[in-house]
Length: 78
Image 1 (spheres, one colour):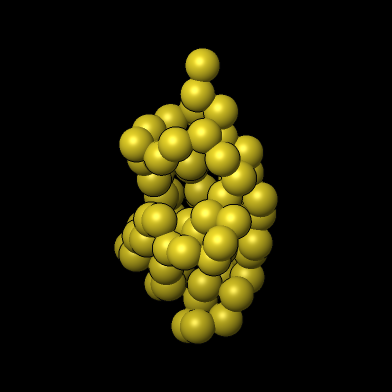
Image 2: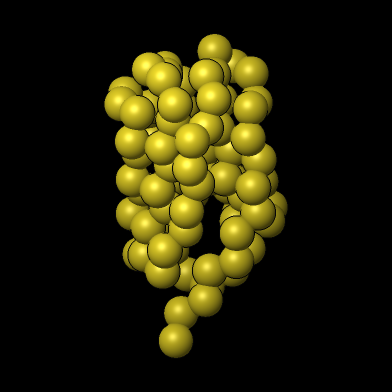
């Protein structure tokens, strides 16, 4: 599994993979608590984070229980 593109919008996270991928995306807060989880079932995954409050989050992408991406994002609400 390899990533083609990774983008964060105000209310969503878009991840595009280069090839067919199976796995999951887990978003955690600074305390390590899971606040959002999504299975990867397509080359393009969009996760709505509109309901999450302002804060720092970690986006973790797993393939067969192996962590392949860990990105920190800062969400601010105006």
